Amino acid sequence: MSRIAKMENLQEFEQLIRKIPKSDLHLHLDGSVRPQTIIDISKKEKLVLPSYTVEGLNETVFKDRYESLEEYLKTFGYSSAVMQKPEYLEQIAYELACDVQAEGVRYIEVRFAPQLHINPRMDLKTVLESVNKGLQRSQAEFNRRPEIRNGSQPPFYYGIIVCAMRFLGPWSDYYRNFINTFSFSSNVEISRMASLELAKGAIKLRNEYGIPIAGFDLAGAEAGSPASRFWESFQFVHESFMPKTVHAGEAYGPESIFQAITDLHADRIGHGYYLFDTSKIKNPKITDKKKYISDLSQYVANRRITIEVCLTSNMQTNPTIGEVRHHTFGKMMEHKLSVTLCTDNRTVSKTSLTQEIMLAVNNFPLSSKTLKNCIVYGFKRSFFPGDYSEKRKYVRQCLEYYEELTRDVPELRS
Image 1: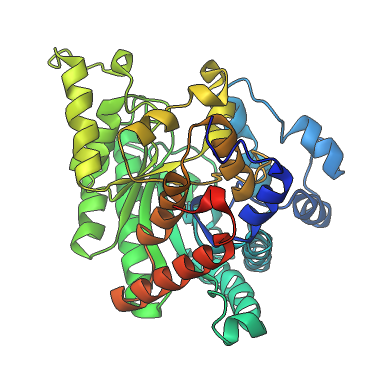
Image 2: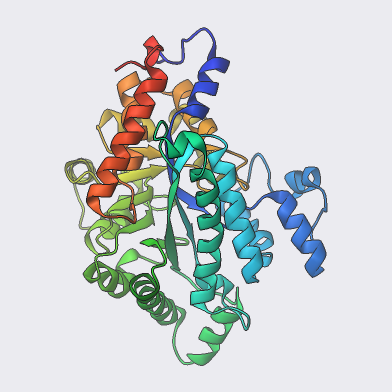
């Protein structure tokens, strides 16, 4: 157990964690909609819910435990349904930013698949502009506070990450039309085309309309949909100097992470849980599996490819982990990887960034330096939408505020 976890008053420590500046780099918009907002919009739009109370939704939809990743993902059907009008997207994005600000989070990268929300009322531009309006409004309100304006505390900033999907189904008007248009193409081909179309749209909207699209992501089930299939869309954004993150190693093995890094130029990896699991290696050409993992983890470490770790989410989607202390976050720390703690889905997983940090503190032998590094990596390895000099200045401001808040806490002095 860490020296931090041995503190006499962990409640006071948790309050301190809420105050220190934090970042959340793996944060799904549709997985973080307030339950009450889902209820309110559903009533207005006459959408069917299993319950119309927050307590009821927390029993029937947003559970403490899920049987599988498939059950976990079913929850998104309810949130996605209330995100089909511009005003709802703006409201949901605004509320999310306000929620994270309330626990000391000063930088977020909100990710979602905008093609899930394209319909006769909204094109890609409208979808992204609506989300940006909500985030921008919350940012402006927060940054007008006296302690922000006088420079004593760091401001709040954000970026937007667009997610391409590994597999398409009739989940939105856009996807249905896309599938029907290419009726003689396989789902593999259709998914690749939709991904490339999203890549082109993201670059155009970033460059011509100034929407702070900070990165490009690939989400969805890894099994049967290898990252290498999507090289064209990732090459397109790569050549346009857009940062990239890829869901990899969440439900598949080290080879998925390798493909994300080499074929898709991933700067960060979402989850990466199975990075060290030799049993997940499927390629028969890899005969020395231990060496393969050793080489891969060294490659990740040397290039400071940051892993976005989501403890609660992984525990819920992968019940075989058993206890939090068995999570490979511990091995990541041992291998000195660049790691940052994230929430994934605040509503679906019933979590906050403060809770994720406390989970790490209570279950792994973290030193004060290691904890500080995890938090600082989040800022340093962010896809901050400003220029590099602005980012350096902002990271320094966040670090100085962290040090100021922890100066009188021996357990947190490096």
